[in-house]
Length: 256
Length: 311
Image 1 (tube, rainbow over the protein chains, first blue to last red):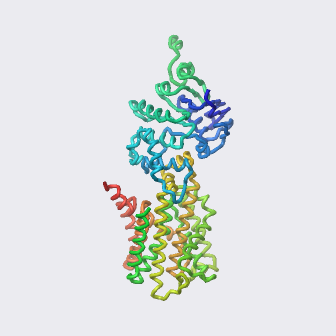
Image 2 (cartoon, rainbow over the protein chains, first blue to last red):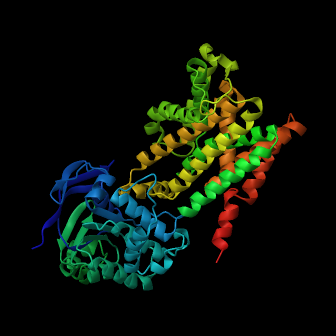
């Protein structure tokens, strides 16, 4: 069995009266492809935000690669090898795609300097290698503001991949993408991930995407984990069908 | 980097050659324009990170007071050393405030810098040992130990200022293209993502603020050397506003545009005050409105746009 990468123990988080996380226990092993599912407000993004240091848990502990990261800020956690993309792509719209990648490289390598040029043959080559994995090489000189939504999503993920992270968190990578573009886009993302020994966590609403691209599903409801299993098993779970996918149980349907 | 240094050298030589033949009043005007341009270049540096300071007048005043005091009390009069010292003093005095200011954005940053500069202005006005509201005079500088005759002063100050401007211009170009320069632009667009990538936003902004303070101090020192006088009006908010005016006129894309805009301001100011002495600010405001309407990215966008259009 692969090694343990992330261990969240007893995570609690409340926003006023709303319970966003209640006693979350999650074990994630290296190279797993895990999908976090649940309806809006179920606690998926809160879980991701706690792992990445955007919000601290009220209680509980998060270990990443054997190190306690509870309470660390996003910058510290990123340096340890946790990267994320966002539901709404967080990019630098007035910079070109290549410049976006160069910013990611600079920040990740901690090479902030007053005189070292950002764009060198070496840094461009490295950025272009990542861009080519996402089929974005031809777009490298375009301003990000000019790109269509699907491409922005890919740039967002490419930025997260720049530092060769150990754990990649993708927050709804296909949201806002046209239905016919979802599978080609996910194929591109998965091909890019396959070259890397990294663990990926997807927040996803599309169950076709979940069952096709993930090898484990964690389902959330009202801040709690209601299923954590193989996709086929988890998606057949009665609670998941009721609270997440919105399907009615066959027995209930026959009584109706 | 070769072409950049060659261009800088050519500009320096052409400027020196041209400056030699200019009348004294024009030498003085260009010296003041370049000195003010250095202060505005610091503002441009901060604008690239998405903040506009309204207190650079105080930084310029710090540099000006520092060189005038050193000249008066210690007799140090070197035209090359004094501006460097002015920049250093402005940077050191503002250093304790840099971490605080680096946490603010938008109007809060602008108002905080304005507030600090007005506190400084109030202190300068009330400090009798610094001449109070009248300020005090500074004597004639020397050039590497050589006293300057009347006919040499104007050109020497122009040459020294031009030398500093060319060196600073080259360094600014290198900085704009550096990793920190690129991250500064990224911060303007999306600082949250910079933090999520492992970059330190507050550190970058604090360093930019210190660099801008150094440039303002140096510019203030050069202006005081040319004027031979320093008073608290250097730090008044209207002075800070003029530096911002130049920075907006120039846009944040070009170092040359900053210097050109500073020269435009001096020309508009000089001729407007000659022909419309009571309403010259009106002409200045009208000019800025036209620039904002037709060149919203500043004068620098004129040649940057041409570069983009080139095949």
